[in-house]
Each structure stands twice: as structure tokens, then as C-alpha cells.
Length: 264
Image 1 (tube, rainbow, N blue to C red):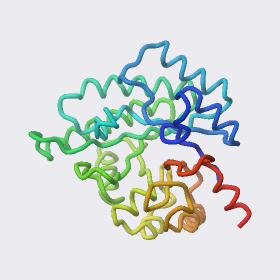
Image 2 (image 1 turned 90 degrees about the vertical axis):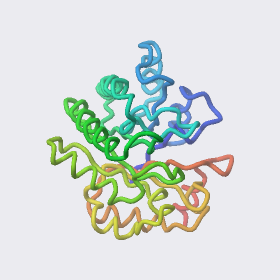
Image 3 (image 1 turned 60 degrees about the vertical axis):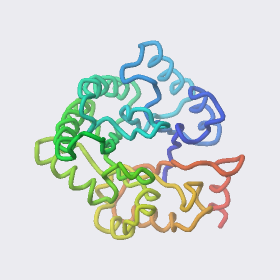
């Protein structure tokens, strides 16, 4: 089992560019980020600083989100957002360039919320086209686009694994095959999906796995989810990737649970 630290939700007491080194100091060799810039096309100097922080820390960037908009304000992706097509297209090129420089090959494309005044069918049509473009855009570096169900935002239309798999199927039918399910066990469980059934049916094809406990979205062991059992079964069924730690720390040491789990 190999973990990767989501430095957009963990280690947030530190400036963003100091978090890769903090993850390394805590014993991890890989990190992932939501989109770490304010714009879809950041200045070259900002991209250089981000890449340099990873290199200086000696960690692998294992996952990166496409720009998802203003996340604190409630945005959850540009993929289906009518009116921001050009911005998303420009972001694809930046994401692919960062992937080429860092060796990152997994890129999470948040689908986007339903928006007032925009027909869901039109949003879905745009999303399919944007996901095809994203998959084609990272294909040249061997990249994979990830698509995930998300909880906590009623306007976000992908709630279950099947919701995401249906979209993935339509993208693959259009040509690109490098798109896969991001199975975030927290989001699936909170949304009422049958996580064990999803694992049994699809684990070998997961593009990535992320975890947090529920209720609370805190570290494993703080809630009621059988995360270790689910992780073990996922690997038994053929998953070979990392496990993303995407939780909110409830204790001063956000990784203390790992020592307790190892001694249990």
C-alpha cells in the first residue's frame, strides 16, 4: 500500500509551497493537489515555483486537478460550465505541461455544478466534449483523466459511481480510453452508494482511490467507515495505484493514525 498526501486539504497551516516538504518530512514520497493557482492559466513564474517546491522536497506529484473554479465559494468544476469553454481548453494545456515536467499522470476533472439558466442536457453535452478534449490533451504524456462523484454539494450531478461511469462510458465511446473513475470512498459512502459493491465490480479499473472517514471527513479511525477493509479488498481485486489521503485533520498530528493502524 502506498499513500499520497493531498496537500490542498492537509498541512494547510503552512503556505502551499511548503507543504510538499512537510509531507516528505512526515515520511511520504508523493503528494497530490487540487488546482494550486488562482487562474486557469497562471504566470510562468508561479508554475516554476510550484514545480521547484516539488523538486526541492523530493516528492512525486501523483495527482493534479484541472481548475475547478472558486472551490471555497462552492464551484466544483468547469467541465460542464457553459461559457467557460475557452478557459477550460487553455487549462488543459497548462495541466499537460505540468504533468510533463513533474511526471504526474493522473488529472482529476471535476464535472461542475448544475447552473441556473443552463439546461442540464446542454451542460452534459459540453461536459462530454470537454472530457474528450482533456483526455486527448494529456494522452501525449501518458496521462489519465479522472472523474469522481462528489458529496456535500446538491448541485453537483455525479453522486454515485454509476453516475460517473456512465459519463466515462460516453467519453470512451467517442474515442479516448484514458479516462477512469476516481473512487473517493468518503464521497461514495456519504452519498449512500454501496461502496463494497462498487469495489467488487470496478476496483481493478479504478483510476485512483481517495479516503476520509465519515461522519466528519476526518482521518481514518475517527468515524464509522471500514476503510482498511475496503482498501485491502481493492488491492486484492487488482488495483495497483496509491491511496490518496484527502481528509481534514482533527488532531495536531494529521498522520498519527498511521502509527496506531500499524501497531493494531
